[in-house]
Length: 510
Image 1 (cartoon, rainbow, N blue to C red):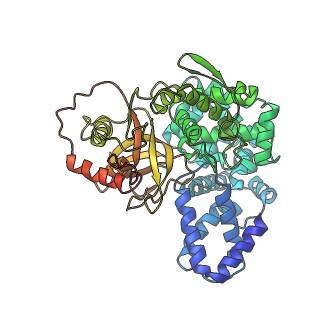
Image 2 (cartoon, rainbow, N blue to C red):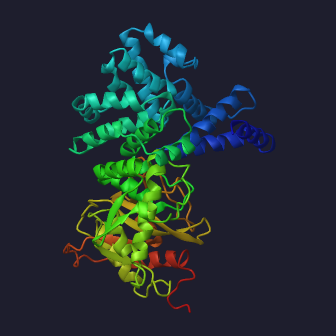
């Protein structure tokens, strides 16, 4: 694959121009990394090819050189000790003769590169393992770039963290170092079930079926047990970095992200069940559903281009999700009304609102009432300034850059807040691998630069409302009926909807 990509690079450079193609590629890599995805193998491959191309000294990329240098150094030479990319064996020998201040500078260099860029060098993983093996573990917090929150968690659960590094952190799983740092920074280890759940995961031997799936996706550089453990650390540390890959499984990817974000001990339980017993059990309206007894869903094949947790868990979740959908056949309403609370968790609002008439597929006649409900549920100026407490599943009508309807898609509503320009924005999680999308008619999803946290996407409130077609809310009255709603803005939102996904769904069109 590397030779093919290099050949493609050469062809593009010859026909488009060195500065144009590499400059655009480097900009795109930085844009993707700003979202902090778990799966960065493709990004690392591109950075490697850029490094090889630049080494050949072909052409001049001008201002893009600084961005490329930072990417390349983060992977191959993040510290003074590996500045010449000497190879792991030579680097470890160099560590043997470093004094403590020099070792500490190495730690600072690794953490700075990791946190600034979002990529982890193989040398970083080797360095962490060396620290444990040579009784220099006091430098681990510096190497992970921990704040006081992460440092407290590390000190409290030191034996567990050291064991996770020993078992899961290898040059072949180097990116897991970032996930481990973020896991500590989240503070989730203070939730009583998490540490025991991770100890269980450390000792869990995957079933033959799970091993085959992991080996098919990742090969044999490390054992399937280690690969899955590394994946668990990454998912727990980066709940918004989970992606669905090129698979029609947005519901399952969203569920994994939501559980990591809000219910990580339940996620650990499901992973253990799926990996050890090739089965998960969930309840739907009092009826037990066992994935092992169900036919394949949309994920009929192994989702090879996803993280290890998704590879093991998504096929089971997909079966359960479709079984819940089958149980709703004949009810005459959108099945997500019942599926989402049962599938995702108790915190999903029991009130359900939809912009589409299920029987006709048209926009509802009372669309403005739907908008009013959304504003009263989520907009701080109209809901009594009530923040989003738990992440809520929602559905959007995805449109392309021409504002043409593409399909229905699952997202998670995370929070609503003003950005630095005093624009009220909805911050959400999109399980699609790249949340920065152009949905047409000026609706361009932002992933950085407007107050987004890593992994979040955002839109101004009216623009998100114009593409939203289902959402949930609590049934608890908020006493906000006296607050006047922005009816003129509703007209603008409806106009945006009718000029995009609802262009052929107008309620007056036969």
